[in-house]
Image (cartoon, rainbow, N blue to C red; front, side, top):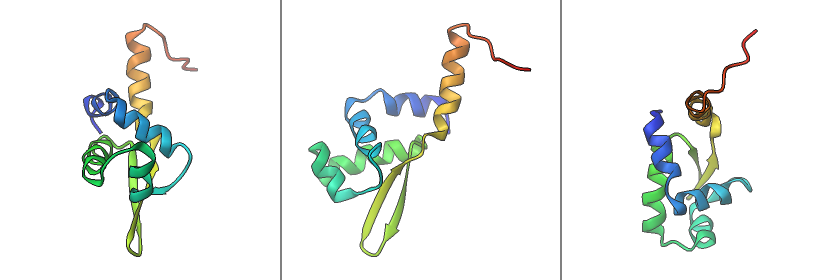
Amino acid sequence: MALHEVLSALSDDTRRAILQKLREGKINSGDLAASVGLSPQALSYHLAKLKKAGLIYETKKKNFIYYELDLTVLDEAILWISTLKGEKNNEK
């Protein structure tokens, strides 16, 4: 995923609230919408941004779609920020 997509996704308060809720574990879209106070349509918009950034993934079970965090993409962002701050890698 592109770094700009990750940073763009993280820049929005609503998407950060969704990520915070997903820290608790897998949740279906209906329960997620209710827990963060969004309509299904609004939630869908934000989930699409988070999926494009690679921060979440979905699984389907019967008639439900469940969402979970996938924070491996944050490694690139953390590395870039560390470099920007002037921190050096601890390479051996």
